[in-house]
Every structure is written in structure tokens, then in C-alpha cells.
Image (cartoon, rainbow, N blue to C red):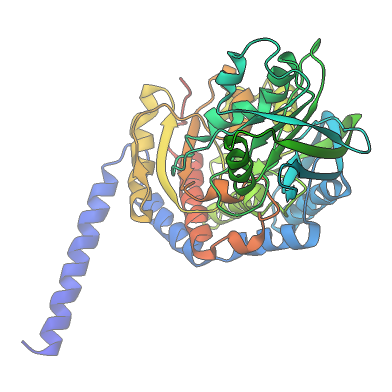
Length: 469
């Protein structure tokens, strides 16, 4: 077989495959063959683009930590406004969000007896301070929050409660919910049992010696006690000492302060639709971070992914429906930006045709699902088909919850989507000093952007809008 004939045969085969693919695409009731060809082009653009990397590098380097109410938070808002304008969004604006402001000053801990040694500790958000010399008392260990709740009323009187719950590792992060209960309510339950302080194993899957911070809460009428977390390695050490059967005494010193009401801003940008401008796709992440690291995974990556995806999704022209990126404020302190957004925009939430938040790091997106009206499932299936080449599995459960900042939207039955990232390693770095730019893989970041860009383009340009349940 000569080379010319081989070349002709290859060309015919390619043309046949292309025709068959186009014919299959043309059967869609939701998208034209031209639109699906554009989706493929956008997908390839995104897989070659460093836009998201450049954004997250800039945010984590030029701004750094962005805890609500700090100078870094204010700088992040200015950074986002400037970046959106430079990227050519049609509209850029901010909306205020208030939150309970809290500042960390210092923290330290040590085992005093029987074997003096330091502990790697962090105060949990909203913790009160200890006296200047700290608090010192015997440790009483519980394996779970439920075990503490079921203990006698005076079980921890005069002691420091230690909950040693070990979080499990899974790519969908299913261990977080059970573990985070001890972070949120542990100090309240400990105080009810007579404790003078509270420390827990970090909500973490890590083997490194970093303590993981995170939000915690007090309850009216219950004495406030210091609330803190130690690294997994230190939790293991403390457990071994307690298991020896001798009294274990530790000192915890936390200096922190609640400072009343603070104000930050949701930063919002939009590419305006040509046919149905009031209808919009809403994607985004949260702009704030904890103060220990530079917030690269949580949630600088989500900020960059959705900003870049929106920009790439309009590379073939203005969309039929608007594409809105919302960078939520004060998520780490309790979804305060999302709550403010819903309150300020409650009369237009019905115009959301699709919503998704990227807030689970920067590993590859492995699954896609929706929470929409059954009439919109064929459209969702078309989107899923275009994501398949990115190794994204369509779960087809139609029960997606969306990211944390979409929780306040749930009563309004908006069409929510889950673009699920692999979280196997996410809780190794979550809320620690180790959440830094070097943990992001640029290739995996590009796959995230491609997935979000395909989703955004298709949701914005479908023949009919996606409807909520």
C-alpha cells in the first residue's frame, strides 16, 4: 500500500468519524452542531491556558492570607476588582457583607507532665483568650463528640477535654462532616461537662505536624472556654501518654479577640447575555482564607478556576445568557458573604439558570451531577457528554448540593451543580500553614478550568434555560 493511498484512506476515515460525530451532536435538542464544535474548541483552549495559574499565583503572592477583617482581606477585594476589569468583564461591582470579626494574636501549648514537651496547636476561629499565663490542667480524653455528650455532667470538671476523633480519607471528603462537629460544638459540650479548656485532634487526614484551624461556635448561657486543635502527630502523642495511665497535664495559651462587627465585600463580575441578559449562570468561590497559610487551595484555586473559566467561555462571542462570577466574602467565618448575597439579590435568584462553586482545592474534577427539574435532564446529559473526554464521570443522581456558599441559596430551589474535585489529599493541607501555592498542580488546574468553561458555556448558550426543581 503506497503512502499516497494510505494518506487518502486516513483522510476518508477521519472525515467519516467527524461526520458521524457531527451527526450525533446534531441530534441534540439543546445545542447546534456549531455550538458543540465551539465547546470542543473552548475545551482545548482551556487545557492549554495558564490564566488560572497566573491568577492564583498573583493572589497568593501579592495578597497572601485573606482572613476576614484583616488588611489582606481588604487587599484581596481591591485585587479582584482590578483583575476582573483587566480581564474585560462587562460589569464589575461589590456588595457589602458583615460578619463577627475575630483576630488571632498568638498561641502555644505544651505537655507539662509527666513528660514535658511542646505541642503544635492552633486556636479555632472565634476562640476566647486564656489568661496571659495560659490555663493548665489535667487532660481527659474522649474518642468522639458523642462519647463526650454521653458522659456524666461533671465528667470533665476542672479539666481540659481532648477529643481524639480521627478523620477518614476519601476522594469525596465524606469524613469532613462527622469530624467537623467536634470543631464546631466541642467547646460548648466540654464546658457543659465542667471543662476549663478544649483541645481536639485536627480535622485532618495529614501525617505532617501542622495544626488545622477552622470555625467554632459558642452557645448563649454556656460558659465560654478556649477552643483549639493540635496536629495529628501531637494528638497521637497525647493519646499514648494518657494510655499509660498516669495523669497528663498540659498548658494552653491562646491570645485572641472578638472585635464586634466587621465588613467585607462580595466581588461580582459579569459577561452580559445577548438574548436573555437577566438570566445568568453563577459560578465562583470564596475570596477570603484563614491566616495560617496563603489560601492557595482554600480557596485561591476556586477563585482562579471560575474567573478563568468565565473568560474562556466567552472566547467565541457573547453568551445568550449572562455569566456571573461571585467571589464570596467571609466564608470561613460562617458563609456571611453568601448570606448577604442571597439577601441582597433575593428578587433575582429565580433568574439563575445554573450555579456551581469551586471550593475543594485544585485536584482533578472526577464527577459531575445536577439538582434540576426533570425537564432539564436531557440538557444536563448533553453537558455531561462533553465532559467525558476530560475524565469526568456523570453520576446522574440529580441530587447535587453545590459548594458551601450555595447553602443559603437552597431554599430558593436554584439549579445547582456539583463539579466534584478529587479530595483525597485536600484535608492534608486544609486550614493550615501548609496551604500554599506549591500544592497546586498546573495541569490539574487546567483540567478544572476546562470543565468549568464547558459547563458555563453550555449552560449559558442552551436553546432552553435550565430549571430548578
